[in-house]
Length: 281
Image (cartoon, rainbow, N blue to C red; front, side):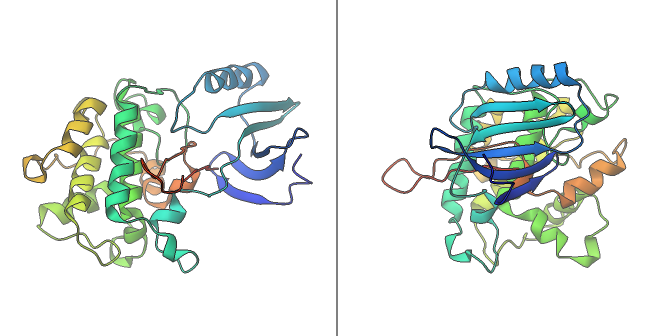
């Protein structure tokens, strides 16, 4: 299927993804899980849960393999690569970057979908997974875990983690605190040398979504209202709590990238523009 794992598509927190092809013809993406901790039955249960999810913004799981300690998941192949390719300035393919208006449309579209469908479960890549799923003493597990993950997606769309990683003077600072301090001190957040009102709106909403205490996060319905409303109506969220922040969480909030999040498929247009299909490791 993968021609001896010849074409690697990406690397994620739980394994590597390779391009494959079914005997019937369609191309697929095969995720090889690295050192799976779950036993066979737990893996099957997880596959059953993922397999029941059918949503326009989620890449479809079409099969799996479980042989002894080896685990693999087979997804639809999304030929246009990861969202990171379209939101991060890179030497290769930089001309494909989406406009800020398009990024905002994507963020709002995902928020609208998630206000209807939530996928609360202890799955995902560290850095996007809500802290209460890692440390149960932080707060109760609820749909607010999905709100947290959406907030981290917004941060990636804005490109703030890339911005912070390049700054040596703040490399050891807890990521949400750095963003908050920039806003609280009245500083403009530099993103790709551009200024755009939607950038600050997305940043404020993201800070609300990634509050450490789940009870402090808005619902996805409220998130949609915030994104659709005026910037002047948004209040600055409280500074994320410095207490009970796991060290591993601090590191991964800075270092993780969107290319390793759970699968997301985005439609770039409501008219005749091209579809953007995103598969992530």
